[in-house]
Length: 409
Image (cartoon, rainbow, N blue to C red; front, side):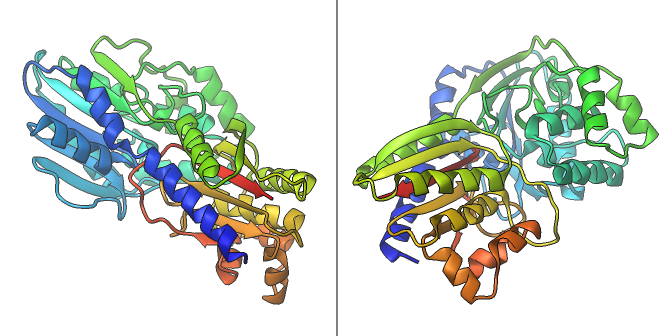
């Protein structure tokens, strides 16, 4: 591993994530917040604790609150707020219990009262009241994750099986007003798809949901099939929404960090949405084409790739993307590819993503690992761990998709 190059990668990751932390974004959004009666706070998602902490710091107090976020994402107490941790990407009993606390908090509010609803990516699993038995919902979620369905397809299904998604949480808050601040983790920022849109009218249809179930051959119990045929709320009159933070800002921050290190940034896309290993192979090919051209270049791609599970290994989409670039980089000097999730977690691992350079493939071979067999077994985590290629940031408190960077000298 080239230590200087790895240091550059780590600096770019740190600067990029620091630029999209939700604190300032929440403060900006609250400039338009002027409640008349009581204010209660509900925050859901991977960035829920950070958003709630910033909001209470600005407001000074709230008349009660509930935070539900991913395990190990609560960083301390927040005055007046109950902080809960729960399962992600598959909802668990703690997801359901925390959501029930939120529903109890908003019950009985008056028209002059306001629910400050802070939403970030990951809310689809964390904020949940299933309309079918929990084990059936967990099984359907696992099927969707394994199928390679994208986030929009997954949420089109999940919101119809839920008592809070697809605008139903806003209905539960009525007659109180809902002031929603949303940190986007979906390409194009479709509000009804971010965390499955608990406070947004649903634009998807029953027909689309049924088509997705057929496309991925989902095994659905009778009750779930019937729910897919029931329409979700198409209009809400008690909601004001402010969207803040997105993958575009993450890419802009990455470009600024690259420029500060002497690289000329080139934004390839902020809507990357293909198979993770295909994205990695493509970025590796871009590096191979431009290596040795006499310029320091940084190719940036933001978005959210997908992984089709074909093996039983450990990893995440960013680790797979990085590992898939290794063969194209083999033998090149001063070139690397790295990819990270802005929330600091990549799949069911403790890593945010992965890093490879021209020395990675040879190091893997020396460790007895073949890149292609490893990808087939979805075991990028252990392969990158063996060669020092994991990127660990810890939970960041934000969640605005992923960014992949290819550095070329």
